[in-house]
Image (cartoon, rainbow over all chains, first blue to last red):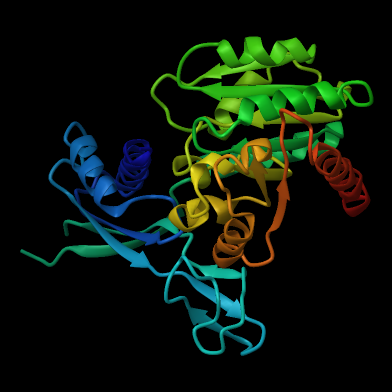
Length: 115
Length: 225
């Protein structure tokens, strides 16, 4: 359960960014979360709520966009979305591929700030 | 009232860890020490495996280890029997090692006097996968007693590692371990992943594994040259 420390990092980043922009109020944090990031969405959401309580981000929302795992298939020469992370093979042609192109994201993409 | 504004940030949440890990990797490279980390669930035999590794390698190589645990210094005491320098990292409530913990634990060690440094992560198949420790090689261990489907349950950790090690092979028959199925499951979540099966207790497979380590270590110097 490392979601709490991750939530705290997110809050810290958002606080710094808000500070840098002259102390604006943050309404929401937009996050990209890959299915292979090792972070559980639900645990992160509740950790965020708990951790933001004591910060200037109190009351803000964490909006998570989950990113499914994509791989590069050398046979199809294209990026393909996996059907299951238990099965790393191209959904189009069945070729096994370990070449992950998407799905490891853990990235703050944007902040929604009060105008 | 005006609409809220959306401002772009685009920052990796684990950037701080990644920056420290990158600096560590650079330091290890400059010092000429090859760094291997171990991840697995609790009880898969990491410490026994590491003790055996240190004992077998010590005559030919300068080896040391860092070992992470939530509590107690038992593992460091156990590993000290190998005569290699060992330091315990007690993480308290933290369920994984982070690059900053490695950096701190290395204080005072002369890395250029080492050939291999081993890092044993906290027993956990989830959290350690998110944190780069600056290692050259990450081994994920699974023991024959854990069941063949472990890779399917934890595809993320298998995707963060370089080599899979099946441990406790001396117990394989007793628990009716199906190695073929286990290997098939590893390949399903990480096609092409190298798998080594061994027993720290009776030594089966240890030679091939040590050979593999020394090979990668010397290979790295060629690549980085």
